[in-house]
Image (tube, rainbow, N blue to C red):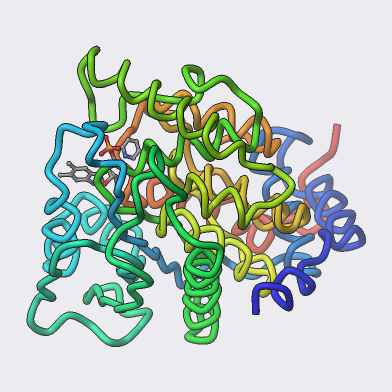
Length: 361
Ligand SMILES: Cc1cc2ncn([C@H]3O[C@H](COP(=O)(O)O)[C@@H](O)[C@H]3O)c2cc1C
Ligand SMILES: O=C(O)c1cccnc1
């Protein structure tokens, strides 16, 4: 399934992009006046293969949740149980991601790919994939948390593959249900540590440059976190040309599943709006599997985590918004959704100089 998905990922369609550029030149606005929105809409036309591309709706955010053996090294001040407890909060509609999803009209799907402690689903959590009013839970546990990557590989290759394929399956299900855009979300106490290791592995950046303060760790914890990332890279020496090997050695279940979601979206030619540092670390893995997958990616925001900027630079993506967010869950992607919708709506609704009788310069 991974191989067939990768094989289905194709470059952006040049004639559709040329048509979008040509249309932009005729709309009632000075050429280039919509800045980054113009190139974004051109890319989305290239992804759809026609101009104008479909409006990116309905929107679905998939929050992949997992726990991390490396939590034992003291890399996060929060107890591991918070991962499962926050899933309960997502299903009850009480998290920041729920507030932003309601604002954006996006449906929330929580996918348990590897939470270590029991998850209690809220009574009546949803089953309809695209109902913005009722978050739903998908149980797809590969294993109850990764192994400690300072001691051994976080995952076997088979486990990493199972998580990637879960992400592909979630993308397929959401697109089959009618989703016009997928948004990435994550929950996993400790998950900024494997995100930093993935970013260092794929970009070649130093451990200290790729590592951030996550939930807000103090100086001694930060120093330990950098040491952990450095030790993991030295122990495993992950090969960036082998993304499954990198995900298995130093990744997380939610990172692997997010890479799968991105690949699935790219194969179905549906845009995928990336959230923060966990999402962009997974996007590096997706790009290593299939370089053309980058065509389907839209960077929602610039996370305050330093590794996010390194990853975005490597992917060649400019984030749509930059508000100093460092939460995850899909929050930054959801805030960027109206920007993506606006970029596409212009191609559908704005009059041309000709049709509106407006004089050109
Ligand atoms: C209450 C709470 C809600 C969150 N929502 C997202 N995260 C974010 O913070 C965690 C990663 O940071 P670190 O690597 O420092 O543990 C992840 O769970 C991520 O989704 C949260 C963290 C907490 C505590
Ligand atoms: O960038 C993110 O998404 C992020 C940053 C800190 C903690 N959790 C997530």
